[in-house]
Length: 232
Ligand SMILES: [Zn+2]
Image 1: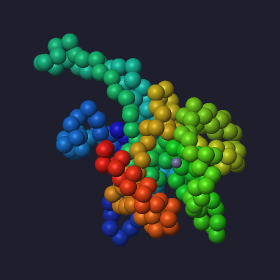
Image 2 (image 1 turned 180 degrees about the vertical axis):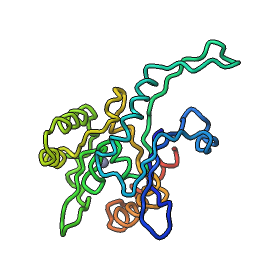
Image 3 (image 1 turned 60 degrees about the vertical axis):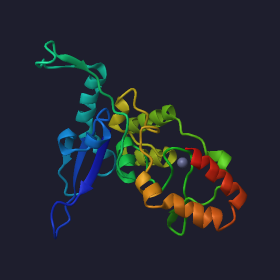
């Protein structure tokens, strides 16, 4: 599982440093995130956050190694394994905050559109908003990762910044080095932002403030939903 986050190491001056690191999902949860079990894959020295697709310069060497790991590599022999050992590893999840996850996988900003379905934000009064659910059938289906790859390849073929910009506006996709991994699914392998959606209460706010208080969910239906939830 890949993660990237920025932090400020100094006081009194703005200097953003970032670490790209990985956790091994085979390990039990209680030791998975201990310092000795995390793999530091890259340091981005700053002083500013790397913008957009430039993150690819840092991802490229990591992806090279992931490609080897997909084919399989041989670990040196140890006392227990006298002949060494073949191992394989794959990247199954990009788990960071939303801006970082979008950047790594080549999606546009979360302000503009959803990365899982076709919902796009409205732009009013110089602000993006995701209001409007009446036309649900038109956008509420999973994006295609094949299409994403195609858009990303087209982006990479662009010869100028202007044409790349145009492409991003049309498709919401930039090239990401992670797409070199044949098995990587840029739609399904990104975490849904549980921290904000669940733990910090966005979902709760939407259900309570909009669905219940504005009468979209009647109490009869709400009870039905609760019954289903209880079964989980
Ligand atoms: Zn969506």
